[in-house]
Structures are given as C-alpha cells and as structure tokens.
Image (tube, rainbow over all chains, first blue to last red; front, top):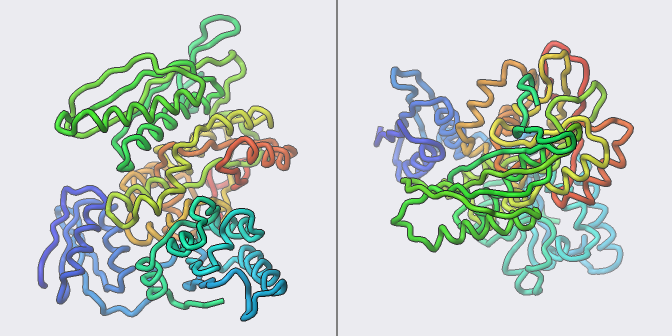
Amino acid sequence: MSETVDARGLACPQPVVLTRQALQNASGPFMVLVDNPTARDNVARFARSQGCAVEVFDEDFGFRLEVTPGTCVCEPEEPAGAGSHLFVLSADFMGKVDNQLGRLLIKAFLNTLAERDQLPTHLVLFNSGVLLACGEAETVSALQRLQEKGVAILVCGTCLDFFGLKEQLRAGSVSNMYEIVETMASAGKCITI
Amino acid sequence: MGLETPDDAAVFRLSEDLALVQTLDFFTPIVDDPFTFGQIAAANALSDIYAMGGRPITALNILCWPCELGSEAAVEILRGGAEKVREAGAAVVGGHTVEDKEPKFGMAVTGLVRPGEELTAAGARPGDLLVLTKPLGTGILATALKGDFLTAAEVEEAVEGMRLLNAGAARAARKVGARACTDVTGFGLLGHLLNMLGEEGLGCLVEASSVPFYPRTLEMAAMGMVPAGAHNNRLFYGGDVKAEGVDELLLCALFDPQTSGGLLLAVPPQEEEEALEVLKRENPAGAWVIGSFRERGDAKVVVLP
C-alpha cells in the first residue's frame, strides 16, 4: 500500500477528487477511507471507471476501499442504455465526395441514430462536421434529440471559430482537442463517418 | 392548502378573490460566476410561486456573505437576482444581509393567486400523463463542476436551464388544464413525484428511457459525481419505488436533487398533443412525457428501464 487517502468527514466530490490525485501518483494499490455510503459508492464508481479493481470493507468509522490501479481491463461504466462506442463526424456530408447525396445521407444517418436504443456515448464533430450543429442546418433537430437522450456532443471550438459559427451553435457543447483526444482514446469503439 | 400532500408554497386567502402565495429559498453558490448564481437563485426561488399557479409580485433578498470576499461579487449576485425578478414582472423591495463563513443567496418571494385557481401537487387522476419541463442532472453536474471534472463551458446547457424561469411552463400548464403541478428541486424527480401521489391509492409509472438529462449527467454519475442528496433521497423515498432492471446510475440520477428544476405536471391524456405543443412554445427548455398516473399497484411509483 503506497499511501492512504483519508477522506473521512469530507463531502462529495472531495473524496473522489482526492482519490483521483492519489491515482495519478500511485505506483501500486492504495486505501481510501470514507465515512458515508455516498462517498463509498462514488469513490468505487470513479476508481472502476478508471480501470482499477476495488474492494470495499465495512469499518467502525465507515468504509475502507482498497484500490488497485490498472489491474482490471474491464470497460469503464457506461451511461445506461448506451453501448460503449462513439461516432466521429469530420464533415457535413457522408462519403468521400461533397454532393447532394452526401448531405442527404448524413441527415438520414443522424435521424436513424436518434431512433436507436443503443446510443453512442459521444458524437465528436470537427472540421466541416461542426456545420451539422449550427444555424439552420437540417441536422440540428436530430442532434438535439440525441442530446436529449443523453448523448454528449463534442463540437470542436477551433473549427467553430474557423467558420465563424460559435454564436450559432444549436446542439452540443464547445469542446477542445484535449477533451476530444481523451474521449476518443477512452472509447470502446470509435467509428469515423 | 392542506398539509396532506406537501405543496411548494404557502397560500393565505386575503379576500374572496385574492390569496397571497409565499415562499423562501436560499443556498450556497453552485456556479463560480456571481451574476449567474444570482440569476439561478432567483429563478429557483420564484419557481415555487409558479408551481402554485401564482404570479410573483415582490421579492426580498437573503444574503449571507464573508466580508473578506469584498463587495464586488455580492453586488453581482444581487444584480443577477434582480434581473430575474424584473423578468418575472415583480420587484425586489428589500432584503437582509448577515455575515457568514460561506456565501449563500436566495429570496423570499410573495405572489398572488385567485382562490380556487391554485395549482397544487395533489389532483392528478389515473390516466393523466406525467410531463416534465426541464431536463435533470443539475446536482450531479454541479458536483462535477466543484470537483473540476467539468468546466463551466461544459455545463452551459444546465446553467441555461437553471436560470430559465418556470413562468412559461406554468402559463402553458394552466392553458392545457394541468390537474396537478409541482417543481422538481431538492427531493429529485422521484421524491417530488411521490409528493404528488398522497395516500389515496394513486400511483405512477415512469419510463426511465423517456426522462431527459442535461449532457454529461450520466457520464458524470459513472465517474462518482453523485451528490449526497441523491443518496439521501433514495434512502428516504426508495421504499415506495419499484425499479426492477433499471440501471443503478440512472436510478441515482432520478433521485438527483435539482436546483431550479422544471415543473412536473399531470396533464389529461386527451390534451397530450396540445399540451406538448403549447409547452414547447411557452417554455424554451422543452417538455417531455415521461410516464403516466394510474391506480396504485404494488408500489406507489414503478420505474421501467
């Protein structure tokens, strides 16, 4: 055990914040002490979402969690009803050629996606893909529906700036390359359209 | 109003055709920007008046403030609050400040309603549709914001939702003949729904897959950003809720305490189309049918996956 995180007496999210710090510095298993069930569940969820193995023990003061980094290759917990996959939309059309057909296809694609039970965790929009979420684009409503269903839509901020469309974003949230890379790297499956 | 089913605000009859509606709410900052916090706290305090079918007329500020933070941010909070009160067509007529270690802001709001025209938490009938007028997730997202798991820009949609007045939703509720109404706040969706059911044998079915959430809510729940309030709500209300096969995190999120949440309405089933149309027109946040009232079965509330 390299160190012990004593998160007793702290309200959420502090126990998770301390666990995240410990995990970043951890060279091996470590313990987290908490004194309430909310913190126990949250720390366990967080650690498991980061690929750690977690064992929980009842103690007089509350709970002791043994966190072992990187031993579990299981997928991070996914939001309910979602498969562990995301779609990358790098253009405002589908296929290699920008024509009427390609625009029709991308609209049909998003409408179909919005009707599915198995939703992606994220949509990542960059380059001219950001146009799909802006202004009067016919795809805005499908993206809004997806968002309502809990799909996180990351829209590249640099690209919005490039097209001068930041004020006209109507679905999704402005994102950055750091977040986009992190999200793509941690996805179970990453599908580029 | 009686105390059999808890209501959102007190109603005191002044005359045959006039009653006062009174409510008070204040809390610690849930966003960093003071002006935005003021707006949210005011929208939240005003919400109880709207949930009772009332029209706000005056508001009194309640501010707890650590002097070492200086007056600039305090002024911004008050400015944000006043802006929302103005938008609601009411006036800030005073207030009180006390020194405190942690900042807190809110309002005591007074409104008017015609006796007999109150919207109450009780009154739903079997067959009525359960309609929600804002997405859920503000408790989880605020926790993630506090823990630096999300940036202010990433919770923008929830912030927009929280500072949106429930005025339009309440107007629409009246137009479509809503039979019962409450607002979703600290007890979470399922807690407030249970408060609509009373002891009379009324039950409700909730389709978890139809419930809207702000972006990133379920993802943040999976990252351990569930606030203690959600856990407490579940402990307190969980016994009346049957949720077989419902994802654990989703259920947590259905108990997530909300700040300035939407209205929860019982709408007669024949009004479904018109209700959704009117609600979506009057309320920028939208409207979702998330279930229906029915005769009580083996649990007061049944949640379907």
